[in-house]
Length: 194
Image 1 (tube, rainbow, N blue to C red):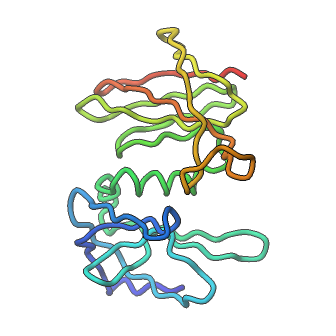
Image 2 (cartoon, one colour; image 1 turned 30 degrees about the vertical axis):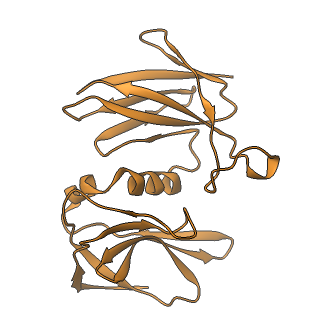
């Protein structure tokens, strides 16, 4: 892969998460984002998320097998704060990739932060001016979540795989999803119980 920082693209039609579906849906950003174009050979790497500019796609998140691991390249916009403009579905895929070794992640719009501790406790904080509904995705070993401040116990659902299946052992993700509301400019503290 190589970068030519003088070559730019401003995706106008949206973003495609290429691992979700046979014909992946297209998600639109709040506003155009300027990114550098990455050039790469197509026979040994994969665009995880494509930025679409008309009929042409450029990688926002790219992966390639390397040795016994996988190398990921995340294209950062020229203006770092443009990351806040990415659609929630695109942010979710980036979080799935970057946080796959953590026991928790949050599916949310931008400006919702996650602070993770090693005692199965974590904080979700919203910097948004309005309330937001998020989904907390937690390892299945934690049977339930409790809000430490209010005492509320959240009930989770088994997460489905990318095909929308979860029934048989082959398709189980080992994760549970919990819906939670976060008030404007506030936080909630959760603790998982086995």
